[in-house]
Image (cartoon, rainbow, N blue to C red; front, side):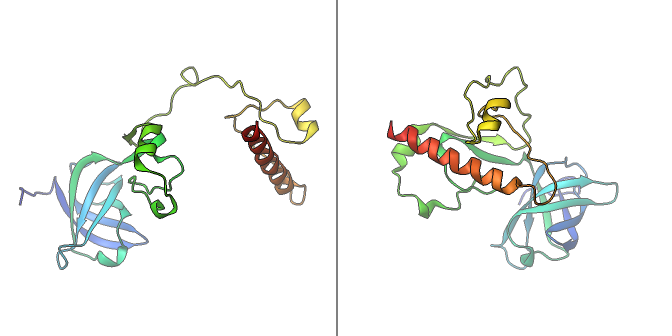
Length: 193
């Protein structure tokens, strides 16, 4: 076992609502992945991410594993890595968890060679900064809502975010459902052409 000290490891002081308060871990950074070991059950291993750093304690949120297997006195060890997840066309359509594991693989019968041909899958930090406005592709495709007044007077492009604001019972949900149904019609019409 590698050398463990207060800078590379700590112990769990309390567990509540998937948040651990730990002692030690003085050299860790916010967003670092830590491994939580159950000293009674060696096979049980959980992963967490450092949420806050304070002088006397460190708060860790559980990312993978169950809170039931963690108790006061469990060992928490640093990994010196940020949280990474899978991204790319290879995971398009899949439901993935925070760490990139596919959760609905049984729903797909697609051949892995075909999925691999769609594009590569890479591990990226979830804390990456988003591209600047200048780096992004310009919006050039119109977004048709199916409501003539909106389509004529308010130009909306695909990829643009719009907010529907209004009081209770003014038709916000009805507007959103109409837009969804129209987009379904537009996509199916394009597929037929």
